[in-house]
Amino acid sequence: MASDAAVSQFASFFDRLRRDRDLPPIIPFIMGLAVAGSTAGSDLQQTDDRRPERVNRLVVVNRDEQNMVVIESGSGGIDSLMRQLAKDGHPPASKASIAAMPTVTVAESGRECPICLDQFEVGGEAKEMPCSHLFHGDCVEKWLKVHGTCPVCRFTMPADEEEEPEKKNEPGISVSIFIRATSEESDRIGDSGDSTPSEAAADDDGDHMQS
Amino acid sequence: MVDFARVQKELQECSRDIERSGIKVVPKSDANLACLLGTIPGPIGTPYEGGTFQIDISLPDAYPFEPPKMQFTTKVWHPNISSQSGAICLDILKDQWSPALTLKTALLSVQALLSAPQPDDPQDAVVAQQYLRDYQTFVGTARYWTESFAKSSSIGIDEKVKRLVEMGFPEGRARSALETVGGDENLALETLCSG
Ligand SMILES: [Zn+2]
Ligand SMILES: [Zn+2]
Image (cartoon, rainbow over all chains, first blue to last red; front, side):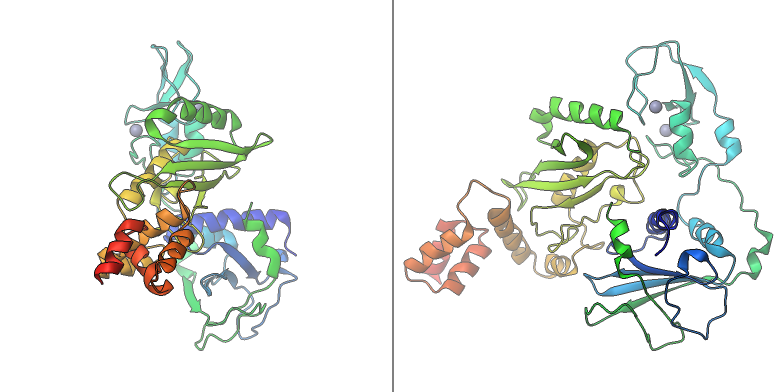
């Protein structure tokens, strides 16, 4: 069984996947995941031996709709897979643009931080985004490090350029969608009929997605 | 860790505004503010009018930096809501979430979705097809579902079917007549008599 840390890593990966790849929202949980060459996947079944060693493969299964999605990345570990996926959608704001936000003093009373909904102290400090919206520094930085947009008006902050020189050598991600006609509780999702193999394991991993 | 201080503020604000918005949010238990129950009235002038819809809400640990998870527990017939599971297809509950949104504004968006279905981005393909190909039947079915599942005070649809059957109409016809007129017993009777 995968460790809790690995599970939560994949939970957030899964969220990110849904946000950034705009996949259908009908995929409620990860049924199994297989990461070759990683300890997290050590007890999961590797059903295919034609593949090279370093293949990261995430299998997402939806029992209701009887379909599944297999995401693979050639090499470089899950981190690189996540970075590649994060390229789409809203990237985080650049560190420089976060640091460049001016600190202002809140003059009038009754204004609240749109994120924590606490009122600003009169005479207290707030961070001002380029669109003039004010937030607590901690609140807005936490958000901008994940999504580079203003929570109130969606003003888009500059993003960091990706600096991954070895990227060109990495094979891309392939996403395959499998439709299954039956709903038996097979742990193995086998032959897809084309060159992309698939696998699934650890039947109850999906439960971790519920919380 | 969920920002429970913020959730408390949200609940207070929401209950202050309940007369105007009709939107209700209550914790399922006092012990855990991460599991809540939302209620929205069906928008006026839609097949959902007169219904009260319950929505199960669970807050992820990172709330409000991640969207609340929302799912209808009241059965509803709508292109962007699963007629099976109650899952909702709405962008602000996914990639368009912002921490400046609240449970109340999210529920208002769900209510707006009831008024303005988006069949091109369906959650329930069957409903969406019906919406696009046979709008009248869609409206009838949506009304029938509202009548059957979203109105606790009204008599159950089975009761009405039973009464029409007692008047001598076949059950299948009685049920489909009720369905076409959205559960109105008198209109169903008229349909049956004229047909
Ligand atoms: Zn704040
Ligand atoms: Zn703004």
